[in-house]
Amino acid sequence: MARRLYWLSDDEWSRIEPLLPKGRRGARRVDDQRVISGIVHMLRSGARWRDCPTEYGPYTTVYNRFNRWSRQGVWLGLFEALTGHSGVWGTVAIDATHVKAHRSAAGAKGGPSRKPSELRAAAVRRSSTR
Image 1: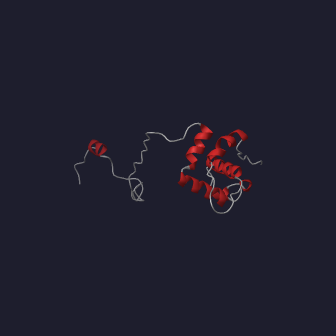
Image 2 (image 1 turned 60 degrees about the vertical axis):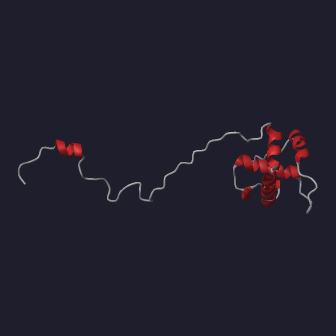
């Protein structure tokens, strides 16, 4: 089965290349276009970072770059350059209502009840003998 990998086009790369951080100290960065393509692929697929295809480089490099640039706010500019929208909305509502329940709250012990309902019990004619 052929892998469906995502690669940034030359047009997309030309739009985001000027927005990349420059002049960082430390070790020389690996190919930005390959790593960013890997990050976009992983975000689109929803898979674990550990499952990143090796064509994008080591998964730790892909994850660390995403994580570091997320903290620095680099991705907002990159996504806006790629999609035309920053992905940030002014108003968002999320409903997180939940109720804690005991693990056995789904049903009672002993199976179905043998006790008749009140309506049926009232309709049954009572006998005079005990």
